[in-house]
Length: 124
Image 1 (cartoon, one colour):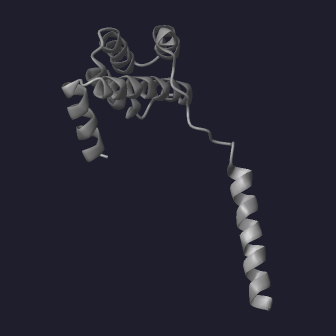
Image 2 (image 1 turned 180 degrees about the horizontal axis):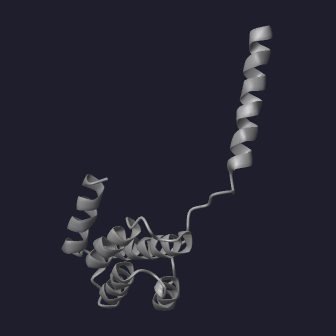
């Protein structure tokens, strides 16, 4: 009986810990396509030149519907150690949008998008 009580208390404690943690760190939401240029410009206007150049190239690639290239540039950008949290968040939101576009292109039969998505899955 005592063993069962310990399990119940432990289960309740675990449930409370999980509930307390929920909602604190929600994943970023994808940016709407029309928000991307302004959001990236605002986030990276005072960034170091290399990071700013990557951000600009990612936006150009996205505007040109070169989603695979935009994804590569954004992943490289997100790996910069000197990014501020707000910059990293905007870049992550942009990357979510790019991934959505890649998935949509794959569904529509874009072979290059399908190959890129497959390569991404293999490299995770």
